[in-house]
Length: 298
Image (cartoon, rainbow, N blue to C red; front, side):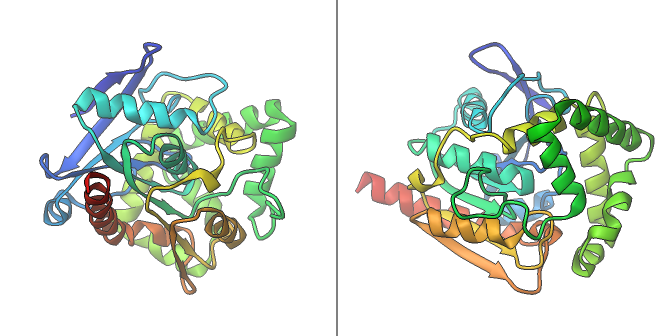
């Protein structure tokens, strides 16, 4: 059953949690478009890992209040607001795809609370030096992000139409991306369980409006509000080398920028493989959080 936390400016953040209530808390930051119902390990797996998994609808998605003109950095305070509501001290974060930049924001801006961070198939900042941001990216993503930078009216029109299509057929987004997907991604999303979770995720996210999707796209394409080089908490970067939605150059830039990053580049993987590696990443986050917490109190 969904719960609600309020931010300092009285916005509503709707979240769910699964797994072991006494386990290590990890915030799962969903992709774009998405919602708190995005793909996740089964509760039994979370219990076995000793993980309490928490996911929320970013502003403008699902039932969370929109925050106009938000930046990537805004996610950090929103996650802390939910953690405070739950009475949590330290916690970990993991972000997949569009959730990756937001997980980085949490690690960069709240190192006193974030014990470890996992970042899967993330974009890099739009002003990343010496990175060709669009190299290797699908035409649909290039079009969306160019509109986010240069033609906001066209972005809004397109994403509202896409959201309406998802409401009519929750599988329409995956069908539309099929031609651009790598073969390995097609195999992943062909799994009935994963495809069902993705369809529910998209429908929950944009069922009320396309606002969250629009705001995500714009936020990725303007200054994020922090420098990943300032991240000091243990951070795992995972990426599939064949990814065409978040090209491998973004991973390589982040890997060279974050001082304490543990980096894993999977040659045979692409974008949606990040779903299957999540249990291993959660185990890593828990182990690193324990080590980091012990070091802080030593």
